[in-house]
Image 1 (cartoon, helix red, strand yellow):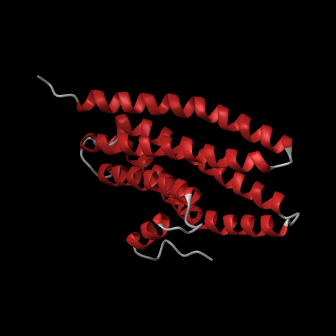
Image 2 (tube, helix red, strand yellow; image 1 turned 45 degrees about the vertical axis):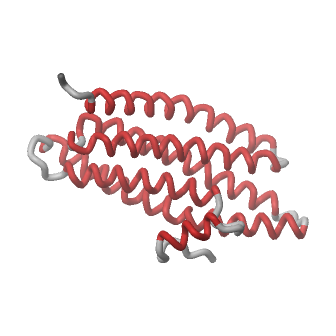
Image 3 (cartoon, rainbow, N blue to C red; image 1 turned 120 degrees about the vertical axis):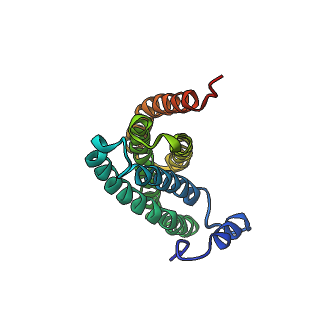
Length: 203
C-alpha cells in the first residue's frame, strides 16, 4: 500500500523523479485534479460571508460541500493509482487472466477523474460571476489545472484501452471521453477569456 498523502511533499516529488515505478503519471493526474479542487475551494471560502455576495451564499455553501467531497475522492486516487499499477505489473509478469480486470479498473479510475474535471470547470465557470473578484486569477488557474488533468486522464485511459480485449468497453470509454472533451475545452476557453478580460489594465 502506498502512503503519499501523510508524508512530506518533497518526499513525494523525490520519489516521482526517481527511477521507481510509483508514483507515476497516473498519480500525478489525480494530484493535478485534486489541486484544482482545492484551489477552487479556496476561492469559495474567500467569497463566503463577504459583503456583496450575500445572494450567492446558499449556493456557495453547497458548492463548498461538493468540492470537499471531490477533493477527498481525488486525493484517494493519488495513492490508489499506484496500487492498481502494481497489480497490473504483477499480473503482466505472471501472464495472469486477472490482468484484464486490473486494466479496466485503471481505465475506469481515469474516466472518473475526467468526469470530475468537467464538474470542476462548471464550478469555476459559475465563480467567474459569483466568486470573489480579487481571486479571479485563482479561478483561471484552477480551470487550467482541471483541463490539464482531463487531458492527462485521457492519455492514461488510452494506455489501458490499448491492451484491453473488451472492445465494447473501449469503444464506450472513447465515446465518453470525446463527449466530455467538447464541453471541457469549451468551458476552459470561456473561463480563461473571462478571467483575462477581468485582469486587463484599465488605461
